[in-house]
Image (tube, rainbow, N blue to C red):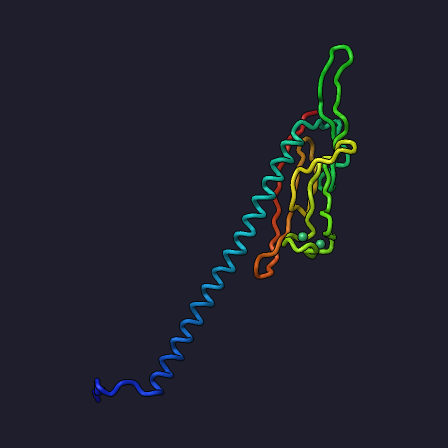
Length: 187
Ligand SMILES: [Ca+2]
Ligand SMILES: [Ca+2]
């Protein structure tokens, strides 16, 4: 039976069309929101990976002149430690021999307002975060921030450094990142 083109739409037809349109729009918006969430997670992970990567590069640069014979506190693999002490060679005299720098220490320092409890206490989206610092006597120099874990492990001359961080994305999903690198120490 052919439809009369002059008849227009019934209320039921209009309501059905509207319902179908609503379902289509809702599905589309859910896909859109899901994509935004995935991008947010991805970008927060990218940011954290980038931050930790930069901290690791600075740690490697700082520790490259450290001499193996002066090292202390470092965990001997497979043990790890959360800090390290070392000295660098600053000069050599044929009569008096080598002269060494003051003892340096690299350690993790929890940020003010943050407790080591697996929560973001200060509301900056980083969990249990703090700084990696270089201590030289009473002088404390920050090497990097947004870190919540730092370990050292020594195997022969190879010193392995691991930095970790945790953050949350806009949807409250927890993101954990670890970066590691090696420094080969001279005797
Ligand atoms: Ca925090
Ligand atoms: Ca905390």
